Length: 92
Image 1 (spheres, one colour):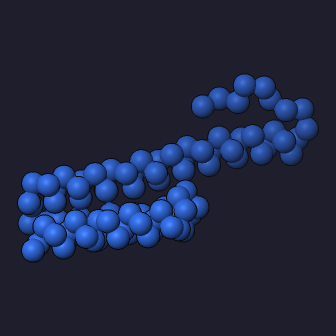
Image 2: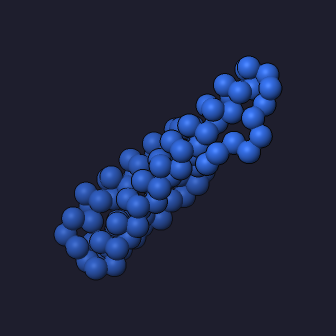
């Protein structure tokens, strides 16, 4: 992503560059979180044996995203709760 108009003030120029970098970093982190959650969901649907390990990884990724402010704390709790319920239902 490029900055359309470059600001004139030096601090604003630096801030614009920083925003571009952090946007890329945040997008990558969110993508990683979504991927791990999808892997867990697929494993539960296919009744794979490694669903518990994937739950642990997905839960950790969700917590990491919440701690960095990429998702809200309540969404993280809700997602983890739903994943735990799906895992429990699959194991029952």
